[in-house]
Length: 177
Image (cartoon, rainbow, N blue to C red; front, top):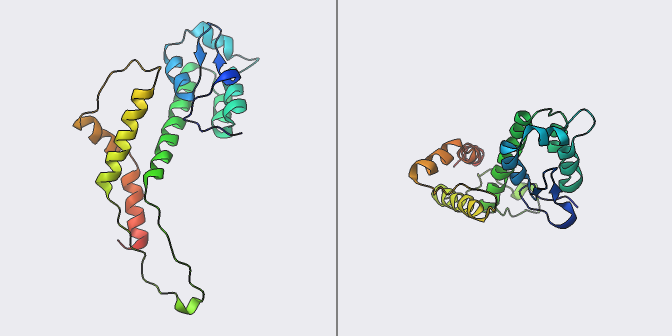
């Protein structure tokens, strides 16, 4: 069964490092790799094997990330690949916050009109929900040592880096809003 890239695993699916540290999520692996000793890293990733590739492939069944990790031969490249995939998954999860749009299907083509579909999207409410979700994820994160609170500057930074505004503008353009 394919696991969500942002979820944690348990039981036999937990990855055990050579230094006996346990990794139960992709995010946890990302954070741990930043501090991991090179000796331990090269025990798991060398010319003969890539244990992180195997774990992602077998447990998460994320072919895209697993293929990227297969080509990573050092910590920096692996950290980059993990960070990119985590950010991509987090952006995708924000779309779950978008209101669903129901379109009534008509029986004949003659009855169909060319009027644009109108919908109400409250961008501020969407941003607020996404910020709350990120804060909640950070609080629930058992491996994070960072005790930062979001302030207005951090929220603005998230808004600027987020592609939600671009996507909403495209939606508006398509539907003539």
